[in-house]
Image: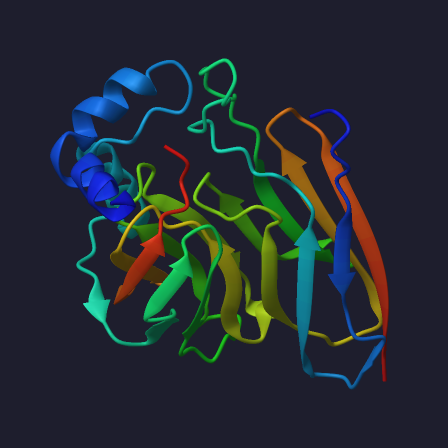
Length: 111
Length: 150
């Protein structure tokens, strides 16, 4: 399992007009092990390991976040909106059950 | 054949089987625990239908990834916005799916994601406004192949 690569992918428009509501799409490759699946060979439960929190910040202020439970699919995908008033940087943070944190940043120019 | 087994699992011996099998790792959440999570979220308010609109496929062939989305009718201004949305899949061993938190900067209170569904069931979306009022929408999804291991 250790070889599973976790790779965040984010789509943010490069440009927007002031006051626009933009759409952001995020995807992170992650198994989202529910803790309810059994290992076929040993018959034992595979321990839970999911992304439990996702957060989107815009110039340091939280604009969207989600608490995830095991019922979220593998490779959690989100689409959501943000109203942009000024140029800046989006920061996306995913928190794993094992404490790992994955981040991604995107800049946007607002005219 | 598969379906029958799943149905028996969920409807009949479901509670007992889950309790024994999943004892140490992620145990299934009992109905009262789920109710408590919902009660905590809605904070004593009576959920009213309207405003929140949940979009789900009518039939999900693969319960492992079921695309869902919701929109909440709100101006999303500093003093009138959607604070958070709780999505519950009532028939899953662990019914709460996710909580989405919005802010006045969200512009639109909408989001899409993909969820796992163990069986044919109702999906509920509770939307909480910043003034504490709660709105609810419910959709039934038929699932051909369940997506929660088991």
